Length: 163
Image 1 (spheres, one colour):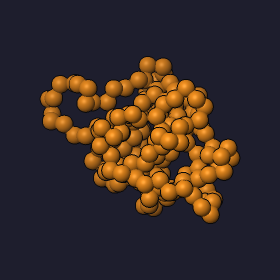
Image 2: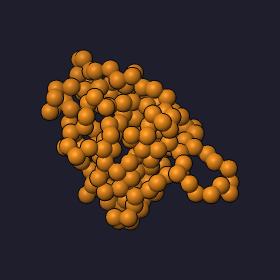
Image 3: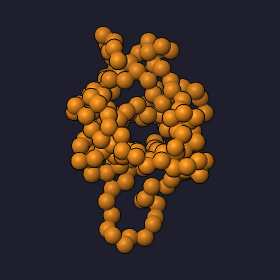
């Protein structure tokens, strides 16, 4: 991706459950034998065949000019090997564009995963490393039939750098 000369800075904060709540859930380790409750991923995968896989992503950097959402399912993402990563998010909306006033960036440690609510706008995973493997849970056809992208550069002439 070509980075515009003056991307907008988007400060990242360490993720925690309360601050991430408008966008989804943060899931951390729990004791073996713990009964299911609201702290565990509340999944919506009923509109197709779930797909759980490991994806290898190459040097993504910290810049983005597009943001995507899936309106038919939740999505879970987490890095393997304990590697830290970044994600920019905006809450689900009825509009075909994300709300810039609610755009946030999070640093996500490698000891948890995130579940994105149905319709949550997201840019990432982003990271400085050469490559990171991520596990991904979504529907088998999410990237074909349920992949809606908003192009900030084309529509608004802006891009972002997570700092």
